[in-house]
Each structure stands twice: as structure tokens, then as C-alpha cells.
Length: 161
Length: 364
Image (cartoon, rainbow over all chains, first blue to last red; front, top):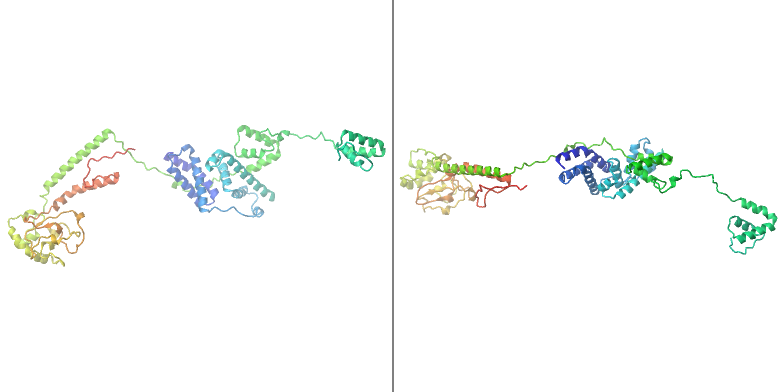
């Protein structure tokens, strides 16, 4: 990977990686740190990185950095232990995006990561498996479970409304 | 009830036997026993018939439509449709599979609703979330210019170094010849003592004057004269009344005051009455070897350790010559330092010899 390719990678993927990390960590400063570290690592190993796989490499490094960060800092918010009915009643019914965000926040870290990699970046199960160090079948199962959980959350909200 | 061949039927248990008969739970011989009992008892024949009419027959008009939904051999069916819908929204199906799912979904409203719900769970990237100030992520390589040393360039470099070397040697030789000329003109004085004090020490010819006898006579009183002239008496000095306490002014072109002088008065060849009989002052300029103690005592402007009194009254001070050489030496030293800093190669040997023809070729 040349200097030019690296800088193109920054231009093209910095927002995507940041979005992905921010959605997981829910802390802007931490997300910026993780993204910065990921790019730093890519710059250091630029000679070993194939430019065509730079996005995948970047997401892999960023994901691992994020996991390290979560383990180290323990700053990520714990899964909210709220009364589902109360939660639902307080939320506006017509804001699907907001409800989805809530539902996403209720997923486990792995599930959330898989959903984001699939929906935001459109990665295949195989690619997600490479990034997250999971098998393709694991990705499929976890992702399907996550999707069903999201669906059930939406159904509950709609039923209450 | 009982599966025994010899079934006993009477007016107390006939109802049970009739039910078993219609439920087809009796053997052929038992059935024959029941039928014979009905024939013998006409009043119970109606009851027997009614019980037989309570049986239901299957309604063949009721049929399950679109039975392929239940077939397990199809790509999408009752058992796997949810998984296929998830694959569909994750875009993990082929074009043919996609068409099959869409066809299947179109046939069943329940499945269609399920798909619509699942599609709602698909997140859309929030494009408004961006990494601000990407400039901190951009990088620029520090390019190192590598000059390839072809044989021609090596030859040119060698020629330049040789020419520069010869020119330097020649220059140094020329400077050595002209060293004697670069001496200060002695100041005229009225008295012989003044002429001794005021005359430059670094001019050996003054002391090689034939009137050396005058020097012998005048040296004992040098200290007194110096005190009168400079009004700076030395506070502590073991070699009082000697030339060691002499503090000349810089007007004689003597070197500047050096504080790192190693005082060694024992080495001074003084007489018992403090008179220097014959003096040859040699000043060396090796500052690095001189220790810095007792500097408050000695402020003579030259190293007393280097002062020796010999029979030869010549006052030889080579520092002036060295100072004149200093220009070239300093230039070579600076060049060497710059070269060493740039290349990180030591250009001198352990005994301080400059390696003029040293080459370093990068293998990269």
C-alpha cells in the first residue's frame, strides 16, 4: 500500500469506520481514539497491506482495537435493565429509527457488531467472519438471532401502540 | 374391553358390547355373538343402530390447497422460511433463490408480513456521522534520497577528495612557512625592564638578543615592576618574586587568561632567593590535559607547568603559530563533525587521526 493509497483509504473509509465504532462504543472520544489507532497501525504495516483489502484490514484492526478498548476501559454502558413496557410507553411510536436504536442497544456486543457490519457496510457472512474471527456459520446464526430479536422488539412496540 | 373369544353378553352389559362392536374393537366371532344377541332381543335393535350412527365419516370435500408449502424438498418451506427471509434481507442468496423467495412471499400473506417486519430491522448508515478533522489521519512518507554510487561517481568522488587533500596539505605547509611573519611588533620602551615587560613574549628574537646578561640582572626586579604597572598583586604564591606571578596585559599579544591552569610550583626551577636565573617559557595549548585546581593562585596567562628554566634563554611560544593554524584545523574539525553527524561514521581513529579516504556505501 502506497502513501497515496493510504490517504485515499482515509478519505474513503474514515467515516465508515468511525460510524461503526461509535455505534458500538457510544462515546465519541473513544471512537476517535480507536479509529486513529487503527489508521496508525495500518500506516505502520502499510507495506504488508494489500490496497484492495485495505477496507477489510481497517475494519478488522478497528474491531480488535474496540474489543481491547472495551475490555480495558470498561466504559461501555451496561445493557440497560429497564422495564420493557415502561420503556415502550415512553417512546414515540412513529420514530422507527429511534426504536431500532434502542433495540440495537439491547443486543449483545457481538450481535450489534454483526448487524452493523452487515447493514452499514454490506459485508458478507464470510467477510464478517474474517473481521470478527468467527466462522461463517457462527456469523449466520448470531446475525439471525439478532435480527429476530430486533423484529420481536419492533413487534412488541407496535402491539403496545 | 375383553379380547376373549368366549364373550358373554346379556342385558346388563350389552351397551358396552355394542360400543365395542361399532368401534371395531371386537373379533369376528365376538361380532357374531353381538349380532346374534341383537336378533334375539328386538327391543334393543334400535339402540344398537343408533350407536352405529354416532360414528363420523371423513369429509372428503375438505382439501388443503397449496400443499407445496408443506413440502420439505422445496427451497423455502414451512420449516425454513424465516431463515430464508433473513438470508434474503442480508443479501446472502443467489439471484434464483431471490426470485423463489419473492414468489413464495407473494403467495402467502403471513410470510409477506414477516418479511416486511424483518426489512424494518435493517439499519441504514447514518451518513451525518463523520470523522471530523481527517487531517490527523493523513500521512506523508519521509523520502530518503538514495544516490546510487556508480563507478563513475565513485571515481569522481575519489578525485575530488584527492584534490582536496593535496590542496589542504599544501595550504597547511604554506601557513607553516608564514607563521614567523605573523608576530607582533615589539613596543618601544625607555627602560630595559619596560622593554622586557612590554615586548611580546611570543617573539623569540627579542630574547635571543645578545644582551642576555641584562635579562639576568633585570629579572629579579620584574615582580616589583609588574606590581607597579598593573597594581594587581598576587595574594598567595609560593613562587613569589618569580616570573610565574607575572601578570601581563593583553597588549603584548599574549593568550587570554586561562583559569584551568595546573599549578606545579615544584617543577619551577627557581633559586633559593626567588630569582630565575635563566628562563625558557614554553606554552603548550593542550587545554584538555590541564586540571583546573589552584586557578585562583595562578593567573599568569600561561601554563606554569610548561614553564621550564633551561640554559637557553630563548622564550619560545608556539601558541601563536598554532593559533594561525587554527583556521584550517578548525575548518577540518567542523567538516569532520558535520560528516560524522550526517553519516554517523567515526572519521577519526582512537589516537585522533583523521581518516581522509573513508568511504561508506549503503547497501540498500
